[in-house]
Image 1 (cartoon, rainbow, N blue to C red):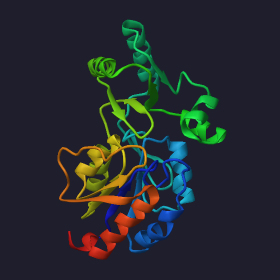
Image 2 (spheres, rainbow, N blue to C red):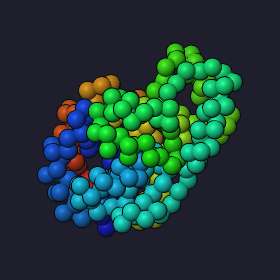
Image 3 (cartoon, rainbow, N blue to C red):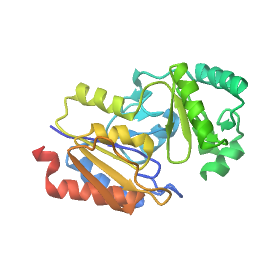
Image 4 (cartoon, helix red, strand yellow):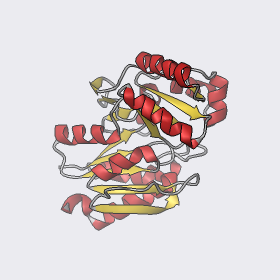
Length: 257
């Protein structure tokens, strides 16, 4: 039976700065030809992720908005555990009015601002705005205020996750919860998780084989409970993805777990 390979996109399978995938493509094809399913597990929206799923010719399901929803390979919604964005935005407005905390969410920003923040094209920036279960934001206050913000969100049953570029306000789900759900559903014998950011930590810890992909923007996030096998790449982004998956295939870890 094949393994499930859960992969972050930005900064992992995609270059952090220019979104290039080319360094990973040959290894990605090799992984799929060996019969393993590559599952995108990302903070991106369904529209963004479906586009990458097609572009990369992937064979697995995909997970969007930090574990909020799982889509089947054909794009149909398979499962959802997210809090509706309308509720998130109402809560953020309430917290802003009550506390005066300073932040700028995607709902506050123009498409041009998102282009400036991300380097995406205007069309892709518009896809990034079309969220259902999360609100990315730029934090404009200090670190002490950030803890106040986390506590306020928690009082409303929400949480804050730090990604590669943004903080994400969402319900109490993450990439790890989606990994566990798909592993149980598919009854796969081995899970691999690859990611670079803090919002990937839970997914990496939940996998049989975890890969921390080196980032040019920040150090490896700290793991509290490392998986049984852990790799930290020497290369960045998609080159690091290919480096780790090549080692995993060569060592036969997907066959012998």
